[in-house]
Length: 391
Ligand code: NZQ
Ligand code: ZN
Image (cartoon, rainbow, N blue to C red; front, side, top):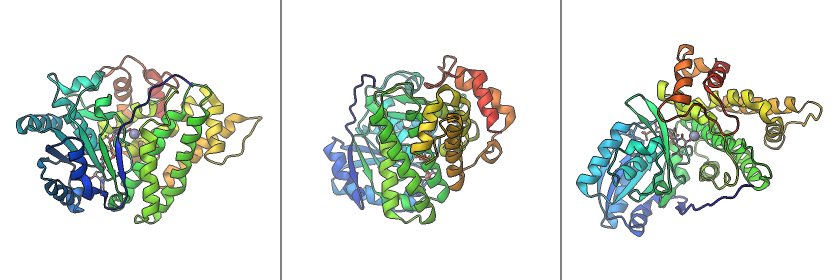
């Protein structure tokens, strides 16, 4: 295990009706004038936005609203939010929605107290300062509710890039599993896939002797494999929703990723797809992951075989461990298909003729230096080969 520091000071309130206390938490963490940020309308339709506003009013907290965040959130609305915060003297940003809304809120929170262009942060500058931020989450997926990360697409070039820094960690997050019961099945499945991806990105490590975090990741994967079919069968299964919601947070606040190298090739390769085709991040990952893992398998067959045996219940073939490794990748693929995820370029709406452009953007576009991936270093040719495995 490598040396590490870990500081994840988000305050979590979990359970039914916890959104009623939003105002109290905003006050506790110093907010007096709030930007309430939300997406395309699900929180309006469900009545959540009204409940949150009532809770702010109950504490005498003033607020301004900015809705309209799209999945794969864009830079345009971020610039608008930064302007609004400055004009209105906002001192706290509250995201009510999914990962896209939270990421847009994080970008606004960072940009509002920065003299330069907020996009500097998405080209590698660490976010040390931002307005304090809270979240009321409505989908188990991105893990942004507990992460120091944000992913935005810049409309100038359609580059989808991430920023990171302790300034972006939410001060508080409200997790009410019942809020996720209104999700369409497809979005639920996209979220499940993203959570599995966050676990695999950490599992694929070159660091040895990481038994504790290996076992934590495996436990979270097993939880997802067990609980996902329950919510696909019954969207109102509160307990299964609850387990998935907490697993999604644990998968990405990095408690199971410390002290080990991580991969993130699947994410970088997927972000090109969701930037170009505007597909859901989870759907893109469902197509990308089996291809990346198949391409990288020979780098460490035993790591894939370990996942196959411990997570997917495959028999260990000691004479041919690569067969076990492959069986684990196939089990992942079948699981993703079973919850309704696409399996290839065609089902995703992606096109062969864009492969070279996407591979170039992943490796050389906006602030990239020629290769991606922490498990296996992949150059543009490798990434093109991987995209071709998805045809
Ligand atoms: O916009 P609304 O109307 O709210 O609808 C959303 C959206 O259409 C809908 N939805 C969310 N909660 C709902 C609901 N519909 C009904 N009932 C509910 N309770 O679901 C759709 C997807 O929402 P979105 O916020 O886009 O989903 P998700 O949480 O998967 O976020 C995806 C974004 O997060 C980024 C992805 O790249 C993508 O842009 N990521 C962010 C990360 C981070 N900040 O740490 C890490 C991830 O790896 C990921 O890259
Ligand atoms: Zn993700």
